[in-house]
Image 1 (cartoon, rainbow, N blue to C red):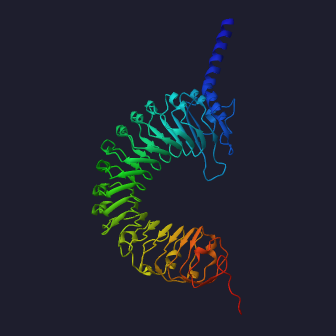
Image 2: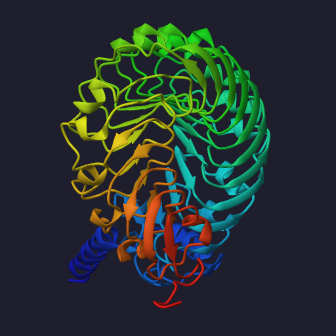
Image 3: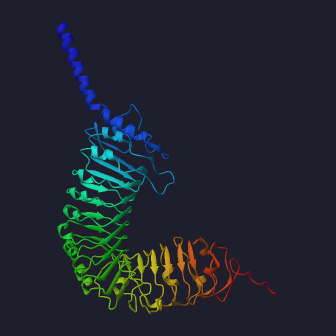
Length: 478
């Protein structure tokens, strides 16, 4: 009898332990490590970590994922930059080392401060680090190359300073390396050429300098290359030609690059976006650009490029900016006019001499931005602006547009309107008061101004405008 009771008790204990294992809370170390992380957060106005409570299952906490419902393997916390309280403030606690099974840390748009967290070196299973748009600062650690298990490393949108460590060349499994939007200086380390698995390399919006290394022959898996908004000089390296089969995004704008645009860029059949703006490129755009049939976004603005512009065979451009070069296009290009999906067209100072009333675009509905400034365009923009439901900005200063401004429908989305130095007449409509920027100077406008926040410079040089911020209107009989 005693033996039977002992056997039944043992079986009951096994059942209870089995039940405990299948429904237990997360591992005690993970529980403690996460609570220690929470203690390092000094401000959580939106209650992002409100579910992180002692004695509860941490696998059920917000932003936490677990492996086999026991060991925490991912922390994912995202702020909301559009909301005033959509963030966390604090630092990353060293006690996070207790969460030993972590393979992914994703901290987006928070307010986390401090230096590069050393605790990341002591998490042996960590493969994915995304600490984006926070406030980490100081130099990147010189021994960052020790984390050889990493697949993705993104530290973009912080305040890191100094050089990119040469040891980064040891992270040979990296598929993504994103260090953009920081304050990094110096050259691109040549060792990055060893990261043969890279599909995404972003170093944009830093203070990097020197020439762009000619090492891309070993990076043929690249789909996205972002080096814009730095201080790079010299020519586009020839080895970028080896990226032609796969590269979809090439962004080199806002640097100090020189020379001619290489004709090999015409071989990039997968190219979606090409940005070469704000450099010092000269001569002509290669004829080979006619082969870029799938390109959606092309920005060649603010260079010294001249005629002739090549014939393009694009079926649907989304955004085009050729402004401030030395082109004499005469009219808006046919392949632009025929695009059914274009939302941004910027052709400022492009030698256009057409009558806007003769332009027959296939689609106007989607336009967000139109910049035709400093050309010799005549006619009226009213029909165009009145047919766009989502227009945000319209710039056409320095043309010969002749129309009644009062007939213009100011879309609810419109924020920027510049029509200075044209031949506009009539009254200024009250609807302009809701705009963010306005310039109607040097036209033939007349009458009392509506109440607006804009300075006198927005209205000077007209025939007979009056009222604040200009001199008051005259009363009859004066």
